[in-house]
Each structure stands twice: as C-alpha cells, then as structure tokens.
Length: 313
Picture 1 (cartoon, rainbow, N blue to C red):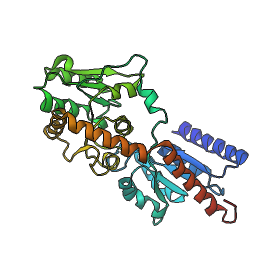
Picture 2: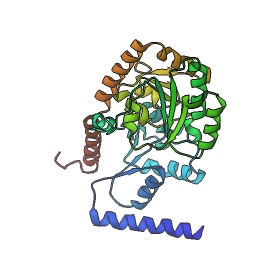
Picture 3: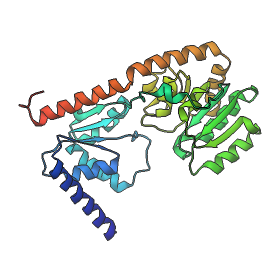
Picture 4: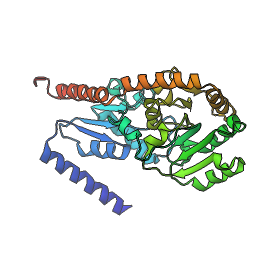
C-alpha cells in the first residue's frame, strides 16, 4: 500500500514538472486513472484539463470503488468532460456538480484510410458470414451471439459465424460453440492482423454487448457497408444507427430476438444492401476524421478563450 502511494506521488510530481516545463495551453487526458492523475497534478496551476471517458458508466462496474469516488470528487475541476454519446452525457452530467454545461459529446473518428485497410493483401472471399469481433470478456456476451446464431440460422447451412478476438473466455466460448453441434459453422479465430478485411468480407455484423462506450467495430462495419444487428444496450449502438434507422436494434438481449433479426437480414439480400448502403453514407458523413477533428479544434479553441478571454483567435 505504501509503495503504491509513493508511486502515485512520484507520478504526480513528474507530471507537474513536465507541465511546468512545457507550459501547455491545455491538457487532454483519456481513461479514468489518467484523468484523475491529470486533475490532481494541476491543483493550483492555471492549466485547463479536458478529461475523456470512453465507457458508459451505466453498465461498467469494473472500475475500483476508490477510483469511482475520486472521479466524482475531481471531475468538477475539469474544463470539459468529453463523452462519446448523448446518452452517456445525460448520465454523467451529475458528476460535474451543477456544471453540466461542461460535458461535451465527441464521437470516435473513422480511419482516413479505411478503404485501403479493408483491401487485404490476400483478399478474403466474401460469403454468407456473420461476424463478431472484440475482447472475449463478459461485457461483450459472445455466448449470447452464438446462441442467437443457432436460434436464427441453424437451418440455413450456407451461413457461418466467425468470432475474432482474444480473452479469458476463449475456452468457455469454444465449448459453447461445440455445444451447438454446428461444427465449423461456428468458429473462434483468435486475433487478426487485418480486421477491416475480415469485416468487409462478411454479410452481417452482430453486436451483443451488455454496455458500450462507442463500439468502434460497429462504426467500422457500417462505414464498410456491412449491415449490423445490435442489442440496444446503454449508449453507443442507438446513436451510431441514428435510433435504429441504419442498423437493426433489438431491444431485448435474448437469443431468440437477436436470432430473428439475423434471420430476417439473412433471407433478404436486398434489405441487407439497402441497410448497409444507408449506414455507410451516414457514418462517413458524421464520423469522418475531418468532422471529428474539427469538433476537437472548436472545443479547444473555446477553452483557450475561456482561460484567456483577450487572446486573439
């Protein structure tokens, strides 16, 4: 305990010394632990700190209690708290203790070269595949995805489910896949060095998370024209799909409901094409790197003017 405290104090002093040397106009910090360090390090210093939360607190219970308490105490000192969706903004506004106007929404940007990234050196043949991608952890509920695929597409032998990712649940998910009796139609591949190419070679992306901040895999799939089926979990999918206009949102985290949504898309290629095309247009217009970078530039310019109202823009 004493060594951890000394380590934290050392970090605070090092950050403070760096700030004194560099004299930044503002500090932008990501992740709760780093956010709290940044805010503690700048006590009595006239440096605006922007803190960014990347997971919706409605579902995340993994953060240690002490860090959650510290977050509530320190965040009101921040010049801005940046979240990724309006749903998250509405929930975390109370952290700012009457300063809810300091909470801003800025989504993640799409990679500028997403089309080039999706063109693999050895192209993957596109086929009737459902894809899931992410860390194999309880939050992502890949077991629910396996059951949904079995429920909706078991009798459509051309369709297969491909799960990409690593994590502690690999063995239990492998057992779940074997229990379906679908053999090679349900496959766990591990990590891939070409995620965009694997997404682009699929027909449907399935997202079953219990909670999200901003599901990049769904954003990327939509940008590549791949229709998505997602649980309407707190924050993320609803905003990305503009309330379900550009993806299939399933209100219940039930295998049967998700399976029915998968089946509806699997049996209707024209609908898949329309949904994929509309989603592609929407996210490329809304979350392009130029759009997101402009939002950051406007925000930081506003903070600079607040700190120095007489400075020239």
